[in-house]
Image 1: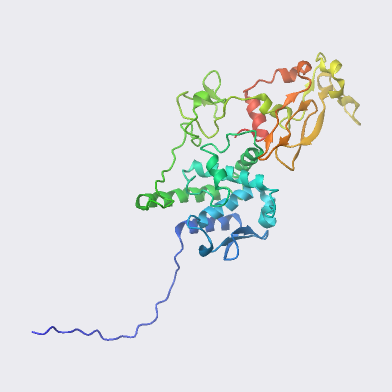
Image 2 (image 1 turned 90 degrees about the vertical axis):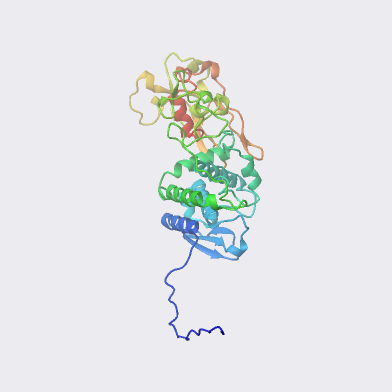
Length: 372
């Protein structure tokens, strides 16, 4: 028996109305984050990544980017630039950076230290790695991108980390990173071997609640664990066997710091019995001789002189003790020369009583960008 052929009558259907468009979920997150921070993202084939200083971030189109580029990573990187440069950079093209010469190369390195530190908090260091010629620098940072506190790019990155907790970046940046973890984490079990999502694992926090640190660090070797086993960073007792948190620091070195003599504090009182008044009078200021000075007690009358000096990062000027030597920026990449006190043997009691590794020491280091 011959097979019967079925014929479907042709029916004219109205054209389908497209009511929505598909956008990569990660792109949605980071486009939305940029928008909430105050930036509009424009895709152009004649650009890689830039800003116009008028609220527009320009990112290359998909066909102009490399296979390991993502819109999410590129927006995140540009936001890290804005954190290093400060809020005023939103009104400057390319965040105020010179992209024609190597003048601002140190700022790029600071941005990458910041980017790696933030990304590592969420287990996203591989996922958010840069795809530019600076990839070698990124890979060389290791697990602790802030380990070298003698490098001014570390100081700039720490300052930027503090900005990340303020408007307009907070809480948007953290919200976007948490959403990224959820998306990448969900995709990881299905990812192919060469996918950036392959092998992703979210990082558990440190037992103190702070972000976990590098695998090679531990509470027992941290400079901020005092003799009673308490952590000055969180003001609680910690176990010496715990791994280190993000704020872990090795043994402190006054000559690599100088914070207490720099812009951390603006006045050092000189007592009536301090030898510096007699042995180094050039470093002593008599405040009672200032115009319109009020009556002063003997304990408040004399202070160590202050001078303006090049700051811990290029293009900055700070106020510091006139007796402090060192702190010059040298080399490429930049590093800071060792500090020293030119009146150390005759320094005032105020200086003698300042204790290495004390709460006051931590405050000073935070104020100059050496400690988180």
